[in-house]
Image 1: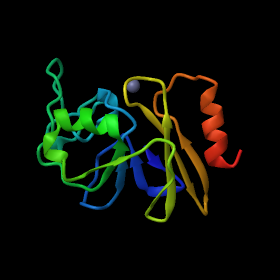
Image 2: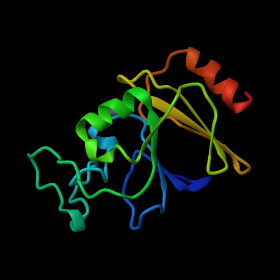
Image 3: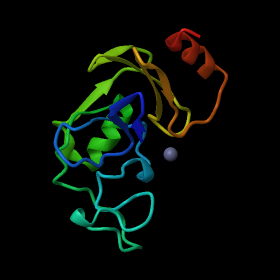
Amino acid sequence: MVVHLNPDFKVDNFWADNPNQFTFFLSHNHEDHLTGLTNGNNYGGGGNAAVGGNSGGAAFQPRTDWAYGRIYTGKVNAKILLNRFPHLCRYVSTLDLHTEYNIKGRLVTLIEANHCPGATMFIFKSHMGTVLHTGDFRYVPRMLEAIDKYTDG
Ligand SMILES: [Zn+2]
């Protein structure tokens, strides 16, 4: 997904035509959120012909040629990601939960998604507004407290 108020930010989608075209964010490591990092289109279909589509049945294989920019994610996600994709170590930056980071002039905060180990949601704040990217999540009331805290209610 391209974050529309931040069109140079992509969450859980790692396709790009050129290096440094986007800043990437990973919410969690389920296969359908890793599209572009593997040799197929994880949302189904033929994928990107340039890197070979998934012909069905076989597990997606990591793209060892991926070199498109910085990937921000939580610490647990980073460990899981780098266990499978060690060649990405120079691209991955970890972010703490409940901490506002200034990334390319926008404030980014990770909060728990209660979905799988390490899963996070992202709050992106800029002069254009605030976006909550949920990814996959399972609601618990404490999420509202965190969302209120980092979105000014
Ligand atoms: Zn998931």
